[in-house]
Image 1 (cartoon, rainbow, N blue to C red):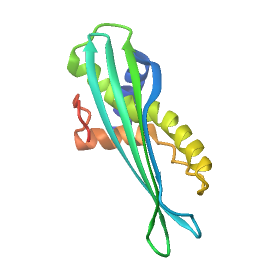
Image 2 (image 1 turned 90 degrees about the vertical axis):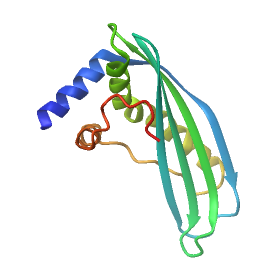
Image 3 (image 1 turned 30 degrees about the vertical axis):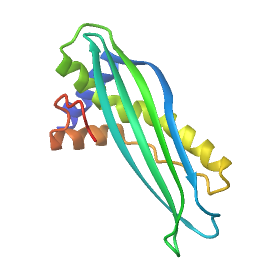
Image 4 (image 1 turned 45 degrees about the horizontal axis):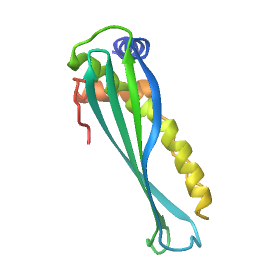
Length: 156
């Protein structure tokens, strides 16, 4: 199973390249001063769009809620959306191209979101928020086991 997962990732990584990525939307709300320990919860949503047989766009939206551990009051909320443009070195069917792009959305776009969130949170006078990195092979394995790498265009 692991060899199949690794081969799928290598195929996607070698066939599809991220050619541009940028933040397209940011929403920030700071409700109160952070006084004690903070609890940070976050969620990710992805979406991909077929452009043509060699190109696809992908989107990663990250929502973060920071709350006070003792009072459970919300301290701040941050939402960051990022767009990536992917290009294939050869023509593919929509299903295959989107399947490969879907495999790469989070690992390729999360670093852009992580950087924006860390910088913004530091400027908000709250504890700096450092989103975790990702185990790419582990994620692909899980998605394959759950059948999520079948070329879905909406993963929200």
